[in-house]
Length: 153
Image (cartoon, rainbow, N blue to C red):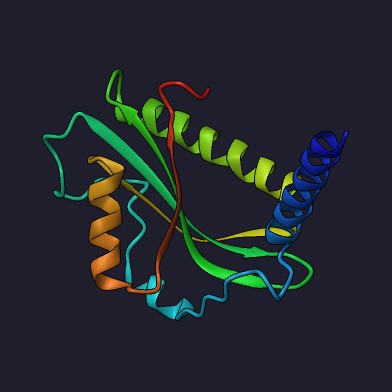
């Protein structure tokens, strides 16, 4: 009986702790400061790709997000979606944008009150390389996730 009670208490503690962390409680959440204007220095490359990674077999779309809960506003989180080149560029870009939109809806429904897009990038490269390129210019950038658009549709 004591072992069962200990397991239930431990499970309850873990569940409550994770709820506090994801709810954005000031005591447990991480504070990130940023420079919003610095991302405007990048040109949006959705309509055309730059020369960076032309011979790559991957296409990466990225959205820089501002995430807000009732307690905290966190900025400069990068959400990536990566797909292997198959057809033409526009259809692959459409698939990556669709995956990003689904993930943002999920984030808004489950974790955040508001999800705002600061900027959007697309490159003919893998997402890790794109993140490294963006991170060298903007030290306050944080990676949220890299989504595999080949699997998630």
